[in-house]
Image (cartoon, rainbow, N blue to C red):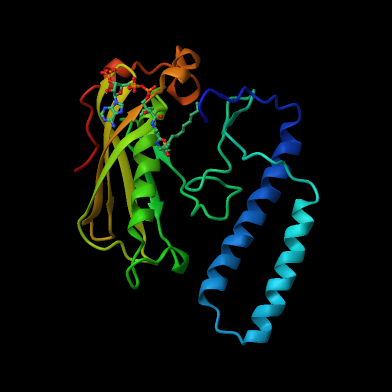
Length: 238
Ligand SMILES: CCCCCCCCCCCCCC(=O)SCCNC(=O)CCNC(=O)[C@H](O)C(C)(C)COP(=O)(O)OP(=O)(O)OC[C@H]1O[C@@H](n2cnc3c(N)ncnc32)[C@H](O)[C@@H]1OP(=O)(O)O
């Protein structure tokens, strides 16, 4: 979603072929996540490092043999799916993305599990604070999107309560606090396996003026949900 440019639905003429392609794209990204992790943690000798770098550059050229010049954007397919595959938090084609798998509860609370490795280290053994904020931005921001208000982040105030430890399963949640027209205030947190909050966020998401005419009627997962009904909605559990 960029200023003034909204993706139009891409027709899915052959869902089976698309599924095969998406499987291959996802597998490539996953193999690159493994490569990134290995790149950070490897202790092989210098000669091996140089040889591998050369091999990787050769592979890059194979992929660039046919590549688009623009970023992927967000596509809505004619079978109703949102394809945000380049997104750095959830994008299945993006090796930078963990990727988060964000799901919604019946009460509108969004959640995802989070377990990050060496590539995301900030303080020793802990997740980088910028990554923590980015994860919260995505999960908390998906709550407004679910009710047909896919806003941009106007602010995201993040409080870091305790370190978010690498290699440990955490739960990230986001929920709506208040809906005011095209503005949605939402909150979220990250909890460790003991249920302790490691970070929390208070955020405002605003559907920009240029996008509002495209969102007159909530679509997809937001269909049938009246944003007015979710005002002052809280999380399922505290
Ligand atoms: C369809 C597909 C979508 C899929 C999405 C999937 C998942 C999504 C998950 C994504 C997660 C990741 C998401 C990302 O990574 S989003 C990327 C990071 N964020 C940005 O780049 C946003 C940049 N800013 C803007 O584009 C605009 O300024 C926005 C959109 C914020 C406003 O827009 P616009 O300029 O057109 O409108 P307006 O200025 O008339 O303001 C309108 C109203 O808002 C109020 N206001 C504005 N700013 C603030 C503020 N800071 N505090 C308090 N209030 C604020 C303002 O007072 C006014 O209120 P009112 O006078 O009406 O009462």
